[in-house]
Length: 497
Ligand SMILES: *Cc1c(COP(=O)(O)O)cnc(C)c1O
Image (cartoon, rainbow, N blue to C red; front, side, top):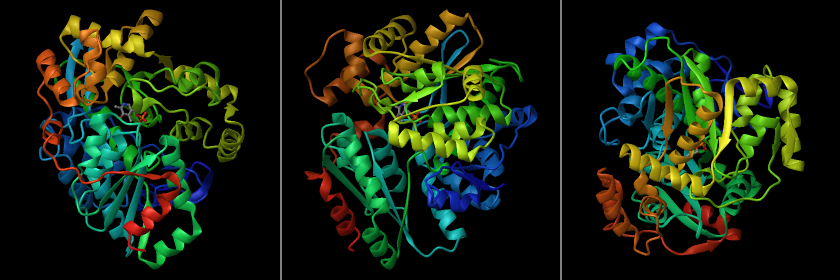
C-alpha cells in the first residue's frame, strides 16, 4: 500500500512519509492507493477484542510500512483508561429503538477529536524515527476551540515535538479558553489572536510557506507538520470507531452480522463522515451516510445540487465546531468518486480558491445522492432537539450531536427508512454547558461556567468529566493576546530562532 496525492496521482509515498509531511508539496491531500477490505468474519472476531486491538487490526491494513510492534506501541499507549474515562474508549448508548449514540467524547478533552489526536503523536514520532529524520517536529494549529485543546493534550511533553496553538481571542467558549490557557507541558505554546478564526488559519498558512521561516527552521533542526484533519494520520483513527461500533452491535445482539446500518455525522470539515465512507468501502455493512450541518449548510446544498459555493454569509452558531465554509476533506471524497481524476480535482479546487465555487459533473452528483443524505438544522431546532431528547429519553446531548439527531429525524420522516442507525455523538454536553442548559431550562443563565456545569450535573445525572472539573483550580499559564501580524515572530521566538 502506498499513498497518492489528490492533486497529483503520480506521487507515491509510504504512510510514514504521508503522516510526517501532513500535506503533499503541491497542496493535495494524501490518501491510500486502494481501500483495503475487511470481512464480516474479521469484524465478528473483534467481539472479544479491546478497542486498542480492534484499532491495531484496522491500522495494519493501512500502515503497511509500520511493523506490528510499531502499531502496537501506538495503539497500546493511546487507547488506555489513563487517557479515556471508559474501558470501551468509545461508548454506545441506546437512545431509542434501533438508534444508537456513539459517544466519542470520553477522552481527555471531551470532544471526538481525542479519538485521533491521542494517537497522532505516536504515529508521527514513529514515522519520523522510521524515516531517520533527525529533526524536531513543530506542530502549528489554528483552532476554533476543540482541535487546539485536543492537539495540546496529545502532544504535551511528547519528545521531539513542539506545539503552538492559535485561537481567536473572542471566538471560543469560556470553557474552551480555560482548557487551553491552563495547558500543562514543557513543549506547548498557546496564543490568543486579536482577530477571528480565519485570521488564525491564514496566519498559520502564511507561516508554513514563509521562506524566511522555512530557512531558519531548517537550519535550526526543525520541520513543520500538521495536526489538522488534512493529515491522513488523523483520518485513519476515525475509521476504527465505525468498524468497532458495528462489531459491538453484533456482539451485543443488536444487529445480525451483515445487517446494514445507517450512520449520521454532524459535519464541519467532512473528516468524520469521510471516515464513515471509508469504513463502508472497506466492507462494513453501511447504508446511507447522513451528513448533518448547522445553518452553515454548504454541504447540504452540495449534496442536493452538486454545486459547492462558499460565497455566502457565515453564521456563528451554538454548534461552533461546525461553523465552517470550506470542508477540506471533501477533496478526498471527490478524488475517489471521480475515479482518481487528479486533473478534475485541480480544476475544481483552483475554481474554489479563485471564485469560491465549483460544480461537479453528473457522475459525482449521482454518487453523492446515492451514498449520502444531506440535511441541516438551525439553532432554535438544535436547542428544541436537546430538550426533546432530554424529556423523552432522559439523555443529555451536546449541540453538535443535537444537529445530527434533528437531521436524522428529518431523514426518517422524509424517507420512511427504518434501518438501524448510529449517530456520532461528538462532544460531551458539559463542553457546551451554556447552550445545553439554556435548551433544557428554556432560559439564559447569567452565571459562571462552573456553576453551569454543576447545575447541568443535577439536571443530567451524568458525571462531570474529571478534566473539566479540575480546570477550576488549574493555574493559568498563558494570557494576553497578540496582533495577527505578530504570529510569525511569536513562532520564531518560541523556537529560539
Ligand atoms: C470538529 C467537530 C465536529 C466536526 O467534525 P468534522 O470532522 O470537521 O466534520 C463536530 N462536532 C464537534 C464537537 C467537533 O469538535
